[in-house]
Amino acid sequence: MEQEMAEYLPLDRGSKMVDSEKQTSSHSSPIPIKSRKKGGLITMPFIIANEALENVASYGLLPNMTNYLMGEYRMGFTTTQNLLFFWSAATNFLPIVGAVVADSYLGRFLTIGLGSIFSFLGSAVLWLTAMIPKARPPACNQTGQACKSTTGPQYMLLVFSFLLLSIGAGGIRPCSLAFGANQFDKGGSDPKKQTVLESFFAWYYTSSVVSVLIALTGIVYLQDRLGWKIGFGVPAILMFLSALFFFLASPFYIKQKVRSNVFAGFIRVIVVAFKNRKLHYPNQNSDYHHKNGSGPQVPTEKLRFLNKACIIKSPEDVKPNGVAANPWNLCTVEQVEELKALIRVVPLWSTGIMISINLSQSSFPLLQAQSMNRHLTKGFQIPAGSFGMFLMIALTIWVFLYDRVMLPLASKIKGRPVRLKPIVRMGLGIFVSCMSMVVSGIIEHIRRRRAISEGLLNNSQGLVEMSAMWLIIPNSLNGIAEALNGIGATEFYYSELPKSMSSIASALLGLGMAIANLLAIVVLSAVDKYTKGEGKESWISSNINKGHYEYYYWLLALMTGFNLLYFVACCWQYGPSVDVDITMRMMEPSDDEDEDKDDLPQKNKSTPDLNSC
Image (tube, rainbow, N blue to C red; front, side):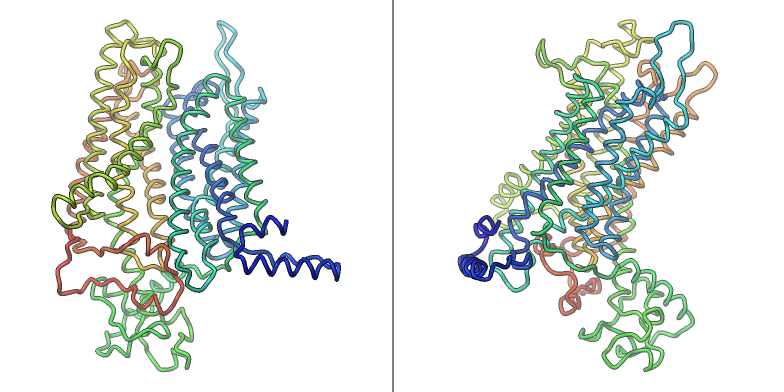
């Protein structure tokens, strides 16, 4: 082991190991494990493999899940879609809980490890539902008898597998990237640190995209060709390997200590501001409490009522070392401004929920693709659940063209650096998402009309003489919308929130997706309830040819259009925004008190900001 480790160590470190080996041979005492080098490039394959295998396993289960629930469990379309919405909501919300648990209690290593175990257990339980016949309703193979419905225990076992998978994702996804970056944080100033980190980020995101593409093609193909037993068994094996590889490298990881929870600071600000609600605002800067070592700062005037949380009522409130005697009676200006920054971005953050609602409609394109001609050649056809890969492909191509072609070309024409501000890209993403819903409705309107003309009104399993390649257009538009709005929103959060809130900035997008999944349930249920009646089929009928999925798409397009107007209003209300180098910001430490003193949002500048909406 020592010889293998020497390959990853600098020359002087390797020399020390040679000397230590000589001492070991003379004193016959083993080298303590603490002498091993911690962190560095040796840990990168294990961390990336853990995330990539988890992505392949989890994302490979979702595309065909509609077929599994409707076919094997005989659930209705609305019930199936709502169950998947709940699962997606839990999967997107629990990473926020995982981030809090990791930062406040367990640390990132243990949180990722437990998440990997839960993901494996969830995929194993789901595999058992396919392996054990009594775990699902019996097949309807007796004519003249009604099919048996799903029993309570069968349904609970299925939901239990979804819950375990969501808990696993909540442990892995919020911590993996940050834990990988920790492996290169060894203190001191290394000129190669930035280059190594950029390489890690590039490999990390590349592996994420590749793993999702493998999930949407390879895993889905196995499910279609070889059945659910193998289609669910392979993800279970991958999750086992994910956990195994991660724990194998445990001796080599840098495991940072748990830090304080920023959410607790937000609660303290609200509580103290309420306690001090009757105080008058002071006239001197010295009457406001600041972080120890930071210069005097005046809290901003926006959301002024929160400023009372940092007013010093008496000298006894502050200890001689500059720390508050009781943090539940006095907060710092920095804590108040952090909460203000979060509150101010919430309206703009809420505008991204509508795009997530549009992207969550995975079952509709699946049923459309199943009823259309998916053949590329006479002997090969694209699985219906694999059409989501075109979203990822379009996203990747757009990012490459935008960063490597469009911006350099525009900069060359203008003679100066040109880039679209994050807030502008967010708005463009909403517009493109609206267009995607419009196009989806048009394609479905043509498909349904052809199905009826071909006599397939009562046969939802019939194949329409129409190429499923038309579905590539809305999927590609969704990918471009996600690239514009999702990436732009993430950059916006990182630039507008202080460095100490970087974990919150990375979690906001997932929180929006979780809320979107819950709202999608409300929209879907309302449409199903109010569009059906006596002798009238619901827009979202289980029979795709009797329903009117195009009306549902156009309803989402109309809602997205109103959301775009709401975005413009929020953008106008927010005012100028900050522009920073996001990559450098992610690499900077967030717990350095000397650096945090510059984190206050500079919104009271007299000079104009070009990033204004």
